[in-house]
Image (cartoon, rainbow, N blue to C red; front, side, top):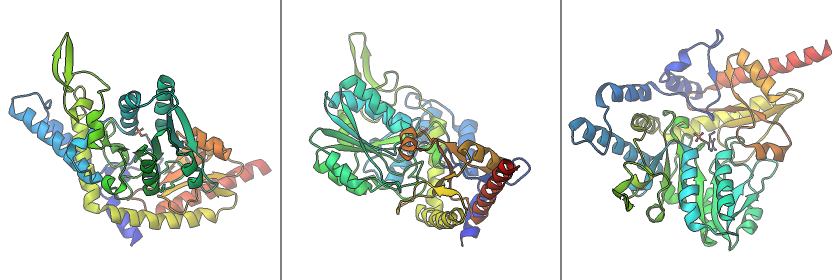
Length: 412
Ligand code: PMP
C-alpha cells in the first residue's frame, strides 16, 4: 500500500533520516528540488574516486573511460524520454539553460519582427524571460494563453491565438505552481497544424510520469536533473535531429569545434556543437544513476503512488476552514498550492518549518500567475515518491496549528 511503498523508498534517501529542529523531516519541497538516493550520491563519489578524467580529448585509458560514462549518460537520457537518437540529447545545466539555448540559437536564426511566440499564463520565469530577451532582439511578439480559475489552459483561446505568425509555442508540461498537467498532445497537434514548433518545459514532469517525446511529437523538451533525484547543475535539452542540425552554436569554445583558424572556425556535429567547454561529467554520471533509480522503481508506480497521495492530501487540506487550494485542474500532478485566509504564505511557511514541515512559500518563479489570481504567493507542498500519508497528516496538523496561532493572536 501507500504507506509501505513510501516508507520503503524513503529508506533509499539518507537525508530523510536527518532530524530537523529535533523532529522527523517532512520534506514537501520536491518541486524546488528532490532529495537524492544513496545510489546517486555513491555514483558521483565513485566517479571522482575511480573514474575522473576529461572527456573527448584524452588518448589515455581514463579519458576514454570517462567519455564512455558520459555518453552512457546521454543514452540513459535518450531512453528516459524515448528519443529516437542519442544525438538529440544536449546536456545543459538544467531547464533554464536548455530553454536559453533554444531562445539564443534557434531564435535569432528563425524569427523576424512580427513573428509570434505563444506562452501560457502559468509559465515559470525561465520559460518567459528568455523569450522576452529574444523578442527584444528580433522584434518578435509574445502572446499569452489565459487560464481558468481552476488553473487549466483556456484551449479555445489557445486555438484562436495560434495564427499564421506563430513560430513557437512554449508551454510547461506540468505547472510548478499549480500542478496542472497541460493537454500537450492537443497543443502539439494544433501548433504543428499551424506551422509552429513546440517547446515543452518538462521540469515538473519527468520525475512524476513516463514521458515519450516521440509519442508527444514535440520539437524541444527541457528538464533538470535535480528535480529527478539527480544532482544540481545538470539537465538536458531534447531537440528533434533536423532542428538541432540546422541550429547555429550558441556558446563558443573547446569541444564544440571541428577546426579553428584565425580566419574562421568550423563547428562540430550535434550534440557537441552545443556543449562548449568541459561539461558537468560527474553530474551526468549522477543523473544516469538517478534515471536508473526511477526506472528501477518504475515511473508508473511512482505516478500511481503520488496520485493516491494527492487525493489524500487534497481531501485533508479541503477539510481545513479558511484554506483555499490554488490549482484544482482535473489532470494534476502531486502539487498542493494553497492560501490561508489572514496568513501571509511566508508566515505560514515559517510556522510549518518550526514543525519540521518543509514547503515552499512565495511566487514560485511564476509572478504573472500570482497576478492572475490576485495573490502575493502561495504555500506549496510538492510531493515525491518517498512521501507518505504521515507527511500529509503532519502538513495538515501544522497548518491547523498556524491558524490557531494567528486566530489566538488576533483575539488576544
Ligand atoms: N520550469 C519549471 C516548471 C520549474 O519548476 C523550474 C524549477 N522550479 C524551472 C523551469 C527551472 O529549472 P532550473 O532552475 O532547474 O533550471
